Length: 236
Image (cartoon, rainbow, N blue to C red; front, top):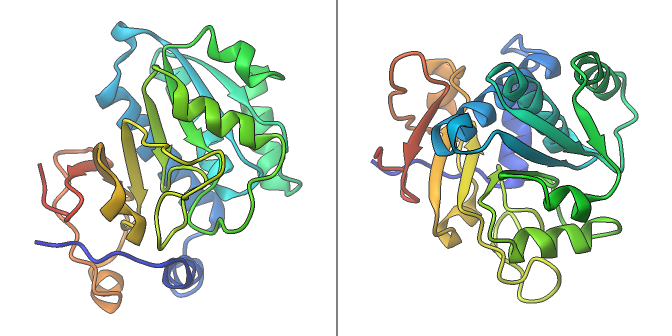
């Protein structure tokens, strides 16, 4: 069973429909995405293997997913640290930051210093809507994600990858292959270039919505919000 991939335009249309006829709010979708990310971290790297998790967040919804994931990781027994140099201006992002601050979750000003004191990394900088040039302060961060020996989980897309083409041929993301990738709702075309462990997250689509977008979703085990699949979508 091959899972259909969604390009940026179609993924955006699906999100918009989920928030229209689907009845979801952006807050709900972000909460479900972040919960899925946190469960993937727990499966890949339980706290017993090292509880320090550094979450690199961008200014958009991908970064919001990372903030939600960090809150769940805190409650799962991890010690998350957030790198969030360009904070989103929307009220939603401000509330997510407040939630983390109320839990005394640390916000790091310097990614490279924080990297020296972590056991696992979550790349939530750029998602499926990314295009164009990687701008400061993220080029050196993406280079560090590429070069580190610490395992990395990327959220929806390895940051700096083109959603259709995959890894860039030049620039800070050249050669970046994270240990794991979690695709949210459905994989994106770039997944065919990915070589690590691949998870699908987002256990909320109705049968009608999945059929409309020709998404053949594999069954999720038990109460999990994630399912591990290969790059062709076969359940592992």
